[in-house]
Length: 134
Image 1 (tube, rainbow, N blue to C red):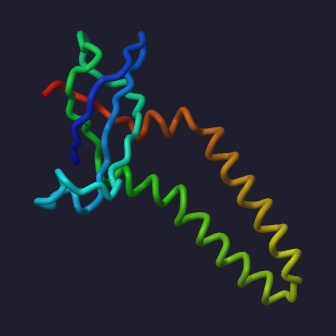
Image 2 (image 1 turned 90 degrees about the vertical axis):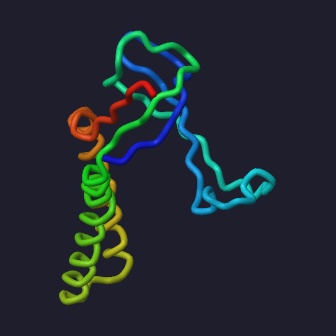
């Protein structure tokens, strides 16, 4: 499990929103206090699995599994890439025009991501992020 720190910014009945500052590789640099490179990026996470009694402004530890993140990358990028390469190869073999290839693959990608969005609730449960008090 990997973990980061965040601050609770909002509490609802079924979830909390946590602000996490994600910084680049230079975050460990000794000059980070005076450097203004702007590499830090704020992210808001909606978390449904959290300890009761949290308060707005409280610091928390965000827990997530690296392996689940890798699975998400496979669903979002690797599988579509495999289909695109296979589709281009197959359509080129049969002499399909480039415009037809583009349209077919574009329709496939739209359909693939629509299917993923249809199963969004299932993915949210599978890739759940948890937080704990510090």
